[in-house]
Image 1 (tube, helix red, strand yellow):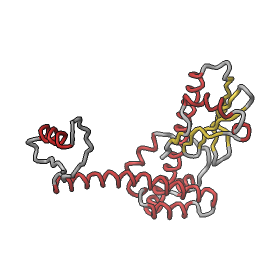
Image 2 (tube, helix red, strand yellow):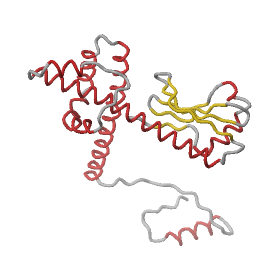
Image 3 (cartoon, one colour):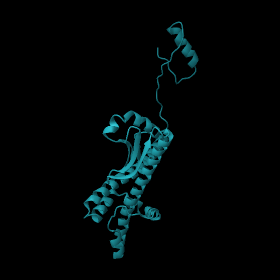
Image 4 (tube, helix red, strand yellow):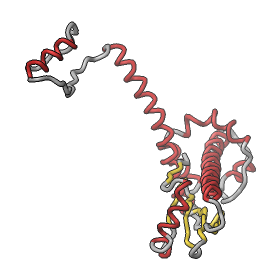
Length: 245
């Protein structure tokens, strides 16, 4: 889900600091790119020094901060630093998505365990959400194959979030927003693929449709009739082509 939106290319950062450092950057940072809850900012530190900062804008927390003296640092090094920062943002955002998705899937498992006589210890352990808790990545894929279909039912998932975060309004709204965006993105890809398959099937059934195309052609000739005769001579024999008088 963590799509990277880039507003400034890596190689253009140095040029941007040179163009903006005496105007916009003196008033505010400039966004280089966004990915999930993370934003990469370009900041003015001094006349010759620029700053590149990754910030989690949801938590208002600086994740990574670097500075470059553009009079001493080659442009290629600055561009590489920006590229690495974008990669870091994508990785952080993917980890956030995986953790939140995994937590919802755990709640689905709790529902199953509760209806099947699951132990209270497991229920208590998985009931709450704690920020910045590291999860094992091996756990994720095992659940995906089991829960993918149930998770994509938006109504069921929102009801599940409402139940398990009933007393936690802050995280409840965050999880609802996440689930809506995540499920809509996942199902839109399925819908798009299905639409392409249906369009291909219709085209095979109906056959290729013919269209009429009109072109403007320039011909060198002494007059209009000679030009028309030249075109007819060149296009003679093709019944698809009609010359308008």
